[in-house]
Image 1 (cartoon, helix red, strand yellow):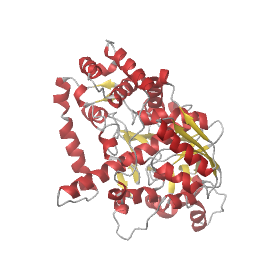
Image 2 (cartoon, one colour):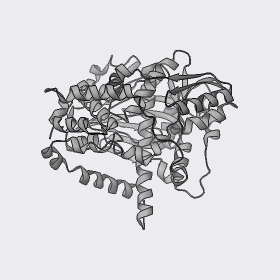
Image 3 (cartoon, one colour):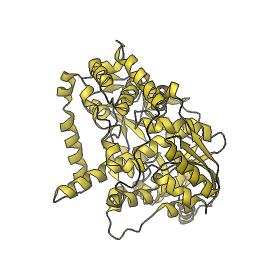
Image 4 (tube, helix red, strand yellow):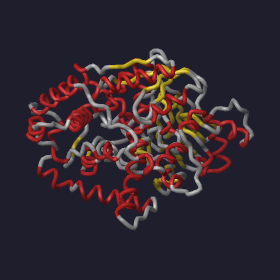
Length: 496
């Protein structure tokens, strides 16, 4: 799924051909997407899956077979800029109204579909992937102080709304961007955190989520978290072919026993050790930014294998809620001393955390409530990033991924019950010795190179010291490989 749009932009025609989807232009505005409706002075786009499609069509006096873009058009005419409040499910929409000289762009409530945007002067542009904004000429490639902090201090879980590029931002889940003669502003129409903290909120669990899925045969990517719970429930819903990264003998035996209990076939995949570092680089291309790294590099080859047989796959994502996974991978120790001092990453992180607690009205009276507030914020951001990356990677692998984290009802329930899920599953998968060796070899080659873009900020001696340590930080080295690949692939310009 690819989409893009431009509003009051002089290079509108330049965007044509950047996607394979329908392209509709109106003066200095244009939209390219699979589902577009144009009428009079309106261009309307809708991408994703609308959960309340039939209900909304009926309320708007439309037939059940009306396209989503037509539904959004009618919703905009009835409710104006407030129409996103009436949409449920993973749907991204855009309305360009030439009569009102206005653009409205909305994300889905769970933030499961990545929406990137850029604003310059009076013009705005948006896209499903940051590379499209760069190719449109809507954004520059500069990475300044905040971007360096995002790359090296936040473990790949970007601060909500921010990316490492200075000119590119990500529209948070539950938000709407409005651009008009007054400028550009972002408003929140739905808050996962606010919903999660409502005392009267009804629980929404795995069984509830699976009931929303159509009867089908699924590839199920097993982990010790949510997807293992799904395996027990899915017996009532349909059938599944199980996939799991081959781990220890005991762990593999446990999943084989699960498959036997479900009477389901299982494939224990072993990552290709000789090219694991290549997989780390490849997923950066598809996701647009360095992510959690190792987990996705293990999943991506399984996606490609599974999608040969199954158009849809299910996965979990419990790792997004683990504090230890979120805090892993702080790479500040690799920075050059002068860069480290200039960016003041600790101050940056403190300011962003304070901004978020104020924005979501989170208060705390003691250390325990402060720690919980911080975990809520980090988990919410991490889960949304995970879901959006999974969707992009699945699309690149040729299929469609589904996870409970893409449903705002489930996600808000998880966030609201963080204390209850503490330490409820095993740590992240361990890599085989061969894969670890492949990462070490790649990192060694990187440290011995002289012209890699990462060395604008990183001290190669710091990488060598890590490689020589008794217990080298493999996830940290993997992220350095990804960051260097990202800087190279997207021709990023570090400004320190």
